[in-house]
View 1 (cartoon, rainbow, N blue to C red):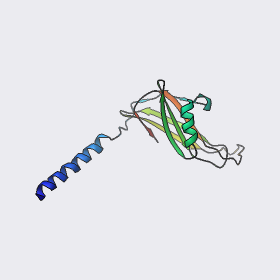
View 2: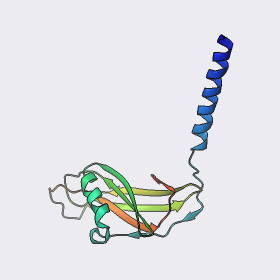
View 3: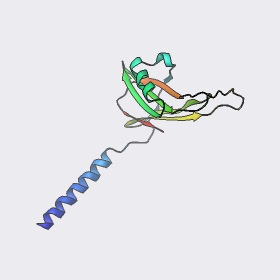
View 4: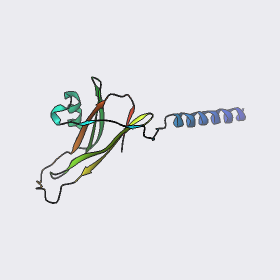
Length: 135
């Protein structure tokens, strides 16, 4: 009887490991994806509402609408003006869309105001149902 339970337990463990391996993301770049950085006015209203709710924290959102995929990446509340978010890369792998962004601080010659800001970027691309990976 103990032997059967041991075999059953081993089978479940192997099944669990197989399931984890099947969900692994492919990291090999297939192609660059063309995208457009949007102004606040160009973002769909429903997605803008979601962004406004999330912008004070680290934000990684996506939204599909009318054949397009919108991706937003924000870096939370900053105590001064002058910050921006830059998109370094956006590319497709076998099972995902990868977006690499970075927070750029105020320039040395830039006038900085002590005012809370919420730096984020929103991009628009052709729709895909692949998982979005933020780097």
